[in-house]
Every structure is written in C-alpha cells, then in structure tokens.
Amino acid sequence: MITSSKISLIALPNAVSTHLQQTETIHKLIAEDSAGYAPARDHSMLYHTNECSTHTKLRRNVLPNNGTVIPTAQTTVNGSVLFVDIRNFTMFADQLHGEEVVEFLNAFFDRAYEPVRQQCGWVVRFIGDGMAAMFEPGAQQPDDHAERALKAALLVVLAADSFRDWIAQRFPKRKLPEFAVGVGIHSGEVMICNMGSGTAIETTIIGETVNIAAHLQTMSKALGWSITTSRTCANMAGDRFQLGRDSIVTIKGKALPIQAIEVVGLYPRTTSTHTDNAFYDKLNRSIAVNAAIFELSREQVDLIQNPIFNTENTLKRIPQAQSIKLDGYRLLRKLGQGGMSEVFLAENLVTHTHQVLKLIPTIDIDIDHDDILQRFLHEFALISQIDHPNVARIYHQGFTSTHAYISMEFFPGGDLRCLISETPTPQVAIASLLQILGGLSAIHALGIIHCDMKPDNVMIRRDGSLALADFGIAEHSDAVRLPTRPDEIMGSPSYLAPEQALDLPVDERTDLYSTGAMFYEMLTGRPPYKGNSVQAVLYQHVNLPVPLLPVGLERFQPILNRMMAKSAAARFKSADAVVEYIISSGLIGNL
Image (tube, rainbow, N blue to C red; front, side, top):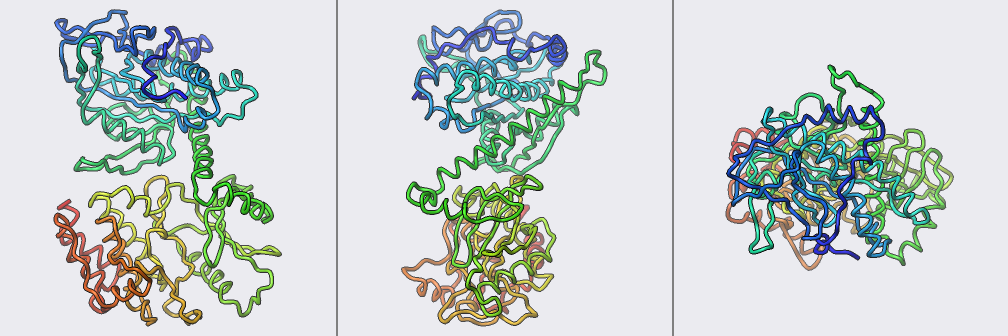
C-alpha cells in the first residue's frame, strides 16, 4: 500500500477541467464564480511552484498568467486556507493494489485540483490522502479569498460526486465503499515561506490560520459535515452561501474556542444572465449526498472497530440480532448490552432516520412481578415527559411477541467519555457542565432523579450539544422506590453518591454529587476515587474528603467541594443553584 511519504513521487496530470465542465452553461456559471485576477505581488518577490518532485507534471502554485515566480524567504498575507481529505481512505487502500492506489489518488487529485485553479488558488501540498490549498487576496478585491475558498470547497465536493462514477467504471467488480470527502476552511493571517535547503526547497504555509483550517477539517469527521468553515471565513465570504448547523470547537493551545459552521450550498447570483437553478440544485444536493455517504461509512468503520464485533463475537451475535423482528424498524448493528437490556442501532423504515432501540426479552417473564420489565416500562414513563435540548429524545415504546422496546435518539458523536479521553480544556469542561446542569434542571423540575449520572450516559449530538440519556434506574420523587435485589448496587461506583452507597433515600442533590465526580474527571482525566474493589471505591465516596484538584485548577475547588459534599445538606440545593454560582463567581469570565 502506498504511504504518505511516497505521495510526493506521484505524477499528477495537468489538464483536468473536463471533469467538471459538463455543459456550456456550467462553463459560464463557474466562470462567473471565478473572477479573473492576478494576485497583488511585490515584483521584487519571486515565487516558485511547489512540486511533488522534479518529475511532477502538476504545477501547484501556477499563477493565472502561467508565470512562475519564487519567494525569497517569506511573506505574510491575509488569506484563506483549505484542507480536504478522502473519508476512510484506508477502506479503499485495503482493497486496491499499490499501482491502483496511485491511479486512484491521481484520478481524484485531478478533479480536486481543478476547482482550486478555477477559484485562483494554489495547491500547497498533497498529504497522504489529502490536499492543502491557499487562496490569497485578489488585486481588485483583497477580501474575496474567503468567497473563492468556499466556492472551491463546494466544487471539490461536486467533483467527488462525479468521481464516484469513475470508481464504478474503473472497478466495476470491486465492492468498494462509497466515496466521500471532508473539507475544512479558515481565513486569517498566513505566512508563506520557503522551507528546506539546497535543491529540496518548497513553498509552504504556516501559522494559526493553517492549524485552525486543518483542525476544522478533522472536526468535520466528528460532526458529520461535508464542509466545515469558521464563522470568520463565513462572514467574510458573503451571503451567497447556504449555511447549516454550527458548533463550538475548542482547539488545543488556543485560548478561545472557534465557532464552526456547516456549508451546505450556494445561492445563484441574482444578476447572472446564465442562472441555471438545476446546476445549483445539483451542487447543493452533492453536499447532502456526500454527508450521507460519510455517515454510512462511519457506521461501517464503527462496525469494524467496535470491540464487540471481533470475528468471534460477530459470528455469535449477528444471527441473534437478525432473528429479532420489529415492525417499522431494520436492525443495523448491536451497540451494547447491559444486565437489563440490549441496545441496537436501527433504521426507522418510515422516517428513514437512524434511531437507537433498547430491547428486553419478554418471553417467560411474569409481567406483573418482574422488576426488570417494571424498570423498563418505568424508564419510558419518565423520559417521555421531558422535552429539553439537553435530554435525549424518546420516540416510541412497543411490544412484540418476544420483546419490549423503546426507540430513542441516536447520537453519532458518542458520549462524554470520548470527550474526556481527549483531555478537554477547562473551557470545554465548564461548558459541558453547564449543559449537563441544564438537563438536570429539566428532569428535576418534573421530580425525576437520574440516579446514574456518569460520562457514558451523557451523549454528544453531531452539533456538539450534550444530552442526558439512560434513565433505566431513574426514580420519581413522589413514587415508591422500585425493588432491588439483595446486595445490588444501583448506579456506577465511580460516580455514586454516599447516600446511594448506603442505600438511603435519594433526591436531586444525589445527581449533583455524581455530576461533580464527572466534572472532576473532565478536569483531571481520572475519576475522583480509585480502589481495588467496588467496596473500596464506595468506602472512599462515603468517608474520604473531596480530592484536591491539581495546580492550575484550584479555582474550581470550591464548586467541586459543594457539589461533592458528603452530606446532601451541604451541597447545592439544585442544578440551577450551581449554574447561578458559576455565573456569579466569575468562573466563566476567568477562563
């Protein structure tokens, strides 16, 4: 298989415009969205093309007038940087021979380069299965680089749409995955400079703008978006771009988070004499199709990488899943299993959306006396009352001859444990805490105590928002407690409140203790107490003081002390009270 270090040796053809220019109308439309210009340059600065090697045919930063000039050392401009990569490229590479991989990459980069050229940008480098491009200020419109970069991004995704046809024709008998790409763009100050020595010198770009663009491209995978740009770039680009969802993205080493924006299409020019809505519809549709393909491929990757689905377990579990029949749903894969239920990802055949199905078997169960089924029905009764953005949505409860099930919201972003594993900054930790408290406030207002607050039960939506999930052991403050088995602990030991460990009555403050334990883990990367046994951990929750935070995080100790106080009476009275404390104490402003 070809490696990223060998990409520099690949010869990339020159003329590629025919792949996108399918009709004379499209020729004109693209031409109108590619205002010709010559970059404003100090003539004393000469620029040389970035070349993959001395044999590379593609001249990367060829200027519109075909002049090739070379920079002396460096220059700084305000411009836009674009990163694009092939989604799940390894799934293709694993099924192709080395020569076929080279041909595959050349064919795609042919198509990906053309929109950059059309929008008067230049390719900085090819990185494995990706490409970086730079859009500099225009001579007549110095600030139009953002607009041209976003247009290029849209056209790259459109090129990916046509590339799927090439794949089908070139490899008709191969069962290759559907092809999709992801793009990230940011605008700001960029340093263009020469790197290397001797004959191995190439022009490259460096700086915070480059790092942010690369990070947005990476984040587009987690968000499931085709094109992800920054609010800075979107505002600069103008109002012709159709924008979709937004999300706050925290970048390591950067003080303030970045607002990421999804780009979903382009509006026609109102003054155009060649307006063809069919072209713009196709352009916009290609963005949606690309995102849908990536979502499907991501599920396939999850299926392969999920530890539950190693070869041995797959042979055991998939026939069992296939034997479960639910009207209106198609089971796609098993997500997990607990003592009380099995959880599957399923497709709703009516809405064609992905939902999570939580099932328990009902065969040979005494419905009137089985506490597992009681808790299952109890969960639906509780969560179906709630309509809040920080609480998982529940859709339906049903029964078959063999199972009871609940259908609920699917979270492609995973859970809070995934976020904790990435060592979130204090800004992200406090922002996450506020969302969790919002969800708790909503359920507590209805008299519901979650009783199992832990990172695994705080889910992440595609837009980055958090939602409380899994109310399997939740209780209602006005209801009789459901029975438990002898010596059974209801909850997760690492986050259990002292009253739960002692099997005492619970209330809203119980959830606040567990949330405090999660907050400690968000800040430090580890749970507050560890032990060699469950009993050892529970003992610490009941008897040991609240652990101290590391140096640099001391400002969060007071809120942690109150949330995790051993006595419920010493804790905050409500989730709203915690939020008020965070605001009044200046914890947000001091980040």
